[in-house]
Length: 380
Image (cartoon, rainbow, N blue to C red):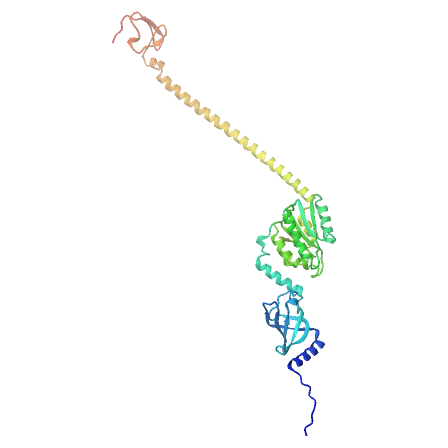
């Protein structure tokens, strides 16, 4: 006779549920390393992909609630670290990794976000050199966006006071570190533009780690700098530190102190330069007067020569006219053997017999001397 044995029979759902329990009990909060494959960002907001290595792969899902905190672009071939729990997807009866947190492998998450945003903004033209504006010389008012508690502000104010005590700094205090810092920095830049009373803006903070400086790598700050009508100097961290703000700004200063030196010239240097310009201007004017006086002497000399020649020419002309008059005058006529008859008593030259009548006295001039006669008869 057959031996009856009690058998434990599972439904598919029961089996799946038990496997799920075992997996979640032993594989929760695990980190898994692999390469992204078959990535799909669904319209629902959920991410579906596989993690694979040389020999195996595992299906993964990262729901919208969790993946909103991912600060870099997930794409095919990217090597990542995923924190999550292993469980079973009952519809297909396959195990998969439910991802709760994700980090890039080989390059830090912040550095990857930095490179991705930098490339994005570069393509949009936010770094173009052609759009950068010159920093005004000796600005009347300098806007400063920074923390009032940091060393950067103290350094800036000290240098402004030393180099040009008359400079006027307007400070808009903001947090420069932490997740809330970027919106405050961007808002301060916008406020300065709305106020429109400053000639240049210093957006600055002291040194720190990449995480400490991260507010100046946020897109909201980059776009506020780009849209600013006021020229912006970015001075974040130390000389070796570069932020997105540095690339967008009209000018990057290696340190906050350097920014203060760039924006205000040394007063003594200006004084010496002005004195030098005054001396050079005086010498130039003196030299110009010397040239003008020399030129005036030359003109006077030339004018005297021209006047002398003019007078000589006029004398020659007068002599020629006198010669013509003498040749045409009565004396020349007398010299040729003719005489001139003048009616007395006025000694008016007579040209016609009608000028006299019998009995009038007339005077006749000869080449030598004259005589007087009385008219006895007139006619043709």
